[in-house]
Image 1 (cartoon, helix red, strand yellow):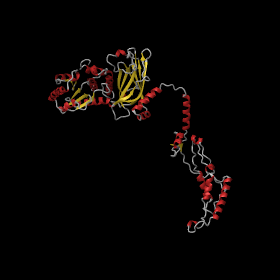
Image 2 (tube, one colour):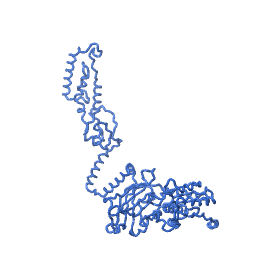
Image 3 (cartoon, helix red, strand yellow):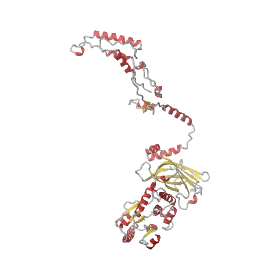
Image 4 (cartoon, one colour):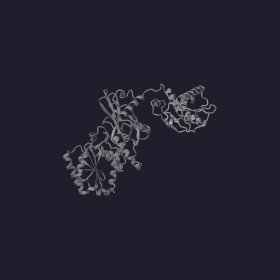
Length: 551
């Protein structure tokens, strides 16, 4: 098959480089000589005329790695030939890489187009400064199409198409380590095609541990700070990268680490991350003014295994020709943890500034010694938990106090206490109050209810007698066995005195009412109170005591 292709191979038009079968790249993308805007249109137009002289216009799909301009010159040039262009960004937070979502779209689109027929071609272009990401995208496409099995060889082959040192012109850091990491992500598609790419998972980036202090101050030390960029995990509709964490440039958070005194540097970050994340480590001078990039790492949380990302000095993006500043055994350990559901809900309700302040306070508090008083705190918490944990199989409902002037104080007294509600049938028994067996209430024990005799004051009995009209008054039978049969003798004597006073008053004032008033023509007969109704009414009054106010 390869011999057949060689015999019938047709060289691409001048101005194009064939990276692989039916994959063409404009040759000026590999050159350090750039066209002016007025020169670019005739150059690309001449190449397109040669292509359209051989193939139909429906045979080409065009990709362009642009600078994010709305009025893109390349798109305007191709539109003159009725060809549409798919645009991709040239970097992600300064790193010449694509996000996993962009990579998936790029390689799937290219594979689908090439699989439609042998006369389908890909035209790939990058604007000025887009060569590093173009090289990565071409290597990812070759890995995805299985035209290369080794990620390093695929990336090296594409780099050789350009003059040596061209990447250094557009990237101050060597991007190859992060690019190789993402090429390995693409290679995993061949292991489990149905599950690639995996869904982004939300994780907590707890800390970064540096083993081996690099020499960035000329004296064998550094003052590291961290910046973390990525999409906000709690804003799924916003895919743009934001600052998720930054170390404050203060003496409380920045300190000098030397190779003589320190072997390990630990920076607590404690920020939620999801998807594509860029972590930068920067060294400051003694005045916290001048910054030098120590290293940069880009990764995707979907491919983090065992909550750990372990990197050596060959797996981090560093400045060109600064590898000797790092010890041979230099390592970076990025430690993650699974995102708790309650933590994610609580954190999502905070603003970005609150999240940063919370992380700073948590970092400062983590260095404190909490040994003093820990036993007392634990004992108090255990005692409080025990007082609230009583449950006898009844439904626990939250207590709702009536809205009054003491609602605030009562709420603070009760806190999170719960009340066990029990439905009971009314009983006509000789007891003065219903008894609840098996129900314990710490607040009720502290504030016991008053006895029935104290709840029914004396004046209530007097008012009942005064409301009755003159005449025969109801007789209280003290021999009946009811809850009020044990009234004090003083109350009975006062009631008899009131009876005599009312009778005397009615005798002396019978003629004071006008005769034309129907209701005053004759004294109304007093109401009849039998023994059963009197007893029932008394029980009903006592079975609904008012709750004493709690201070």
